[in-house]
Amino acid sequence: MSGIFGVVSTRKDCTEDLFYGTDYHSHLGTGYGGMAVVGEDFVRQIHNISQSQFKSKFFEDYRRMQGNKGIVVISAFDEQPVYLQSKFGPFCIVTNGFIENAEELAGRLLKQGISFSEVSGGLINAAELVAKLITRGKSIVDGIQYMFSQIEGSCSLLLLNRDGVYAARDRRGYTPLVLGKGAGTWAVTTESAAFINRGFTITKYLRAGEIVLLSEHGVVQKAKGFPLAQICTFLWIYTGFPASSYEGINVELVRENCGRLLARRDNGIGADVVCGIPDSGIGHALGYAMESGVPYRRPLVKYTAGYGRSYIPSSQDTRNLVAKMKLVPVREIIKDNRIVVCEDSIVRGTQLKNFTIRKLWEAGAREIHVRPACPPLMFPCRFNRSTRSVKELVARRAIRKLEGKNKHDITRYLDPESAEYGRMVDWIAKDIGVTSLRYQRVDDMIEAVGLPRENLCLYCWTGECPRAKGYGRSKRRSRR
Image (cartoon, rainbow, N blue to C red):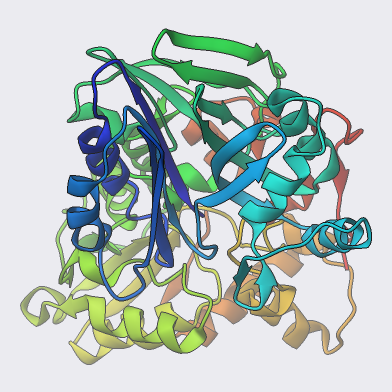
């Protein structure tokens, strides 16, 4: 996932708000940071932040860049912002999402004589592809809507030109965009936490497909969007920052709710300690502790925020290194205790097994009970660059081992009351080496968030694809 942030100010310069607001998105991307500002002219800077933090890379840049409007991105994969000279005049663009049919769309444009100059990881840069699609429209707004109609997946974006900052939330509403107002300044952000310490007040959560223009004169709606948004539930479970809110619902409160609901389904394990895997597991663990009465303690401590999130990097070696280095066990709290470990999710299972559970056993834990705050992940995400294949998912690996074949109907494995589901969870518990394992249920997770089911994307757990204007009815991927 990426984090995007844009500012337009009536003052001469917006770069301080832009710089510090963007830094509150550092938990969302570990690939590239990029910043573009318009003053007398466009100024753009991109840095690789895979081995450093946004602040250190851009501190000198933001102090020399001047302009009253700008956009910034912290990206997991693509080098952004992209700058384009177009029939609409020059503009810069940053995007957040994943375009499933990018290769097909790029091939179509190449046949029409359109060239691409930006490459990320050997692939055409998604932000450049989006920019080229937008230029096929009659205007910027028409072009954004045309792009929405062509892509499969998701794309929210900020487009900077001399008029201001165009902000467009993707048609499914999978990723959030939030508007805020400060003193003579308007801003738009992925993470609402970016507003709090900069003195911005939230004015609106953009609707799915909505397009607005931020300028020195305020905010003008350019496209109304759609009443139904199906936002990524994983934002609350794992991805989002605890102080942020999406659709008006705070992340930390949802995580506490998840922990409470996990505790209500737990009976008789007699734990001594509840802990959360830092950072995103902490809120879940606090909720579990409050509901169960078992004390919350910290047997695993994250050394610094600099190691980032082990879920994001595409390389398994990098994920393993981050997972190994960032958590330090506290033996005096672990030894001889029965520990409930609250985790946001289990994706591949390798890091939890090799770099978390192993540390607890080696430090003398008596029992280890793992409680993920979401159901087993069954389908690779279609709307963001995270898991990209079925083979990566530990739940699917369990099913393959149990079925003894590559192709199988997984319908029964989605039902937490079925014998098949129970065997799958038992296999995973044995594989990662824990005393017990109990996942959150889909309905409990929905209750924890507090939105109607139809307003949430649950694809990675259920295979149900969100609906969007022009996409027809909600559909489910093959159960095989």
